[in-house]
Image (cartoon, rainbow, N blue to C red; front, side):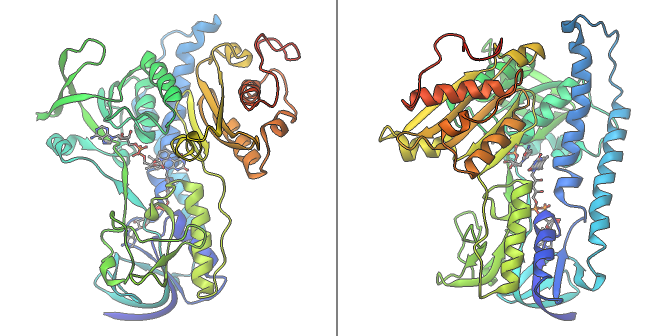
Length: 488
Ligand SMILES: Cc1cc2nc3c(=O)[nH]c(=O)nc-3n(C[C@H](O)[C@H](O)[C@H](O)COP(=O)(O)OP(=O)(O)OC[C@H]3O[C@@H](n4cnc5c(N)ncnc54)[C@H](O)[C@@H]3O)c2cc1C
Ligand SMILES: NC(=O)c1ccc[n+]([C@@H]2O[C@H](COP(=O)([O-])OP(=O)(O)OC[C@H]3O[C@@H](n4cnc5c(N)ncnc54)[C@H](O)[C@@H]3O)[C@@H](O)[C@H]2O)c1
């Protein structure tokens, strides 16, 4: 067994680990980056990028089919599944290739391949070949898909997102379990590419929404396009030959249906990769899911005696905000602090922002509605404003006039606190709102910003006006806004 002594060891060469490496290497040359799986990052290989490539192809098919609504005849839209998957893989490989290229800047001596686990708080065993003694350690091990045992009945027809991006062709049918972020993004895309689809959920959850009104709007809208039951009653999952056979109570009719699918896609959440690290040897205080307690500004973990640890945790591994931009920024903070330990710096954390690339898109900004309700609802301190996209001018022009947005603010201060958005291209509005919140703008200050015409953002202005009125800081718009453009 080889022995290495380093200042900083980083476990996981994903997005968080790579950011951590760059930050840590500003403090020392003796930094080692350990990867136990494939290089290239989850985001580029099997996450953000291939999913967006599939969605882009689906959008093209959808637009071609929808062209008739504009008086444009497109005859015979045909999806060539092999060509769709070939383009996806080619572009995906390009993104992965760019990660490989940037990794070449990391000297080979600073990279180590193998699965790392703790032998003691400062010692990692990497595979069966190397023992690394490190002054400080960053855990950046990401997350993986998780599913209930009953899905195992589908055998090798049970798949996760990773498998979809390995297909050479599109299947005929798929049953998606989990109408969360991954399930709706991939499910809708596959449906638009001609794959027969059913989506099953539990407990009524849908996408990232916690506000029942927005969730109901999304539920109704998606159900106009494909079958999704957020509170499904699935009676049986079986394997029959090459098919997965699912018996379920159909939402509308209440009848039991039995259908055959090529695959069962488990999109029922992800769990942090902290269970195979032998953390019991690391002297870390763990929560009930086995995730180390940590400080979200320094990413420093705590020891079992509640004292500060020399171990840091970043990215999906800590489960706080399993998103790419958070993994990057947490990696940077954790790597920097591992480099300067025991002198730490509190890192700047941005306003929470999450976007789902379904159509209509879904987005959440700021503090979640459920937490706001709990914190401010009781004292009647929470004001809500909303606007529908149903008659929003630009959305009507584009035939994308579906959706609802709800914005939240604090009574008295008029401070913007958060939003749940469901509508066309809300990715842009979500950014505007997050930036406004970073600047601590009040609703009146946001309304005083420039608004072009005719744009989708005018819909956002409507929601802000409504919120301002509910804050009792301005008049409600009861009729069509006289100062606005047509369809505003
Ligand atoms: C289908 C899908 C779509 C997504 N789309 C988006 C999106 O559009 N926008 C967005 O913001 N986010 C998206 N995400 C989330 C985003 O991909 C993740 O938040 C991000 O990639 C997490 O980065 P990470 O560095 O924490 O983990 P990873 O990139 O997974 O890196 C962790 C690394 O650690 C390695 N590792 C694990 N255990 C060990 C060990 N013991 N020893 C050594 N190495 C180990 C793993 O092999 C892996 O390479 C998506 C995720 C999925 C699955
Ligand atoms: N656009 C993006 O930013 C993007 C895209 C994909 C993934 N991600 C990240 O990946 C994370 C994981 O995504 P995800 O979709 O796996 O998780 P999720 O938590 O968003 O959704 C899981 C869904 O599965 C449901 N579920 C749980 N058990 C079930 C069961 N037995 N049967 C049916 N449904 C069940 C849950 O109620 C929930 O709706 C996201 O939280 C997000 O952070 C982000």
